[in-house]
Image (cartoon, rainbow, N blue to C red; front, side, top):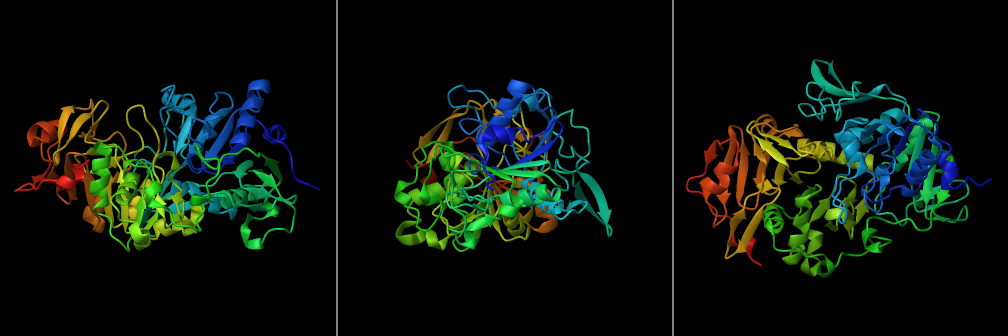
Length: 522
């Protein structure tokens, strides 16, 4: 008997009070039709109510593949636990996702966990253990001595505990049951065996299915097509049908944001660097070029979402990948692709022309094991105590994503971002930069709104190195504090740097070197 149902029938499997888990990475592998059907059912029937949603990663782009934003409805959503939140401005409406409003206005119980914890936690649910124990996240907003991962005042339950084991402190994430799982694949046969031939990522699809079934729950897969049973090699079927209760066929599902299907993200061919997007001459390009100068061939380099992921694109433009030069580099992201070129914007997470792929849990095993010695990550705030924040600032609450796992386990770190934001205007050329209008929001602050990672502590206690790269200055995080080590030609140190900081650097290099003039060339 076939396990095929439609999306309306899938939505009716969810009961009030259930915990619904779903997997997606921005637009990639998001079961968008299933989430939309659940929202449509609530709008029609006012059922089911008071659901908890568990998303290991930010699911959907909040625009055309709305993902978790579909179910961001008061009454339907009571609680959400997610490894990250999608927080963009809509390109036409200039509004933020509805889920961001619910969090900002304290309409729901919202929790944010590091993605590594949110994925590894699924393994503990699947094997019916009491919870997930880790050192990662100590001293950050996930630590109960700070916010304990709580993003709204309504979030009062302690989902993360501080425990001591053998004289050492750990964070502990107790397990709780998952009732329904929504996942996505490319193809299903009538028994529910799932293959991923059209998908750039696997993420935590298998882990989530295992966790839900261990709880006695229901797993529904959204797929593009149905295929006859016994027609695919076993190693192509990454989720066995014994874990799948039902599947829904959605022939028009997108591979990712603005991407119906592009085989370049599946590997089997090199990325053509001449077809990669070119960044406009702007502060972000200067920053990406300076960050790229820290990338060393032969060293596994991991890139985070934001300005840091532009570094491979400027390397391609500069000819670093010509004559198969891409093979000299080993690039990855927190979501499992290896090799090829890391993409930026809504294509981030997948690589163009990858050579290998790990699923989400295995990738965070790789990261947490210290196998990414170099990391480039964005920053939103940096403070006098040497803490960095990307998880919650102003009206933005994107969460940490993979930032904490990556930052804590890399040896050499580069944090990228403009010096100020919200209205910054610059003139770039002649080997330097001039600030024409300062941004209204400072990034170098006395105290960050939230500690995503204590950088200076990592430098002092574990021997990490860390640079902060901006369009006008470069800093090094030292054991004693923040040192100004480079300045752009055309920038006044006092007016454009020191007076735009809420604290003074502990050291200014003397003489103070100029940033390479080539960074500012058109």
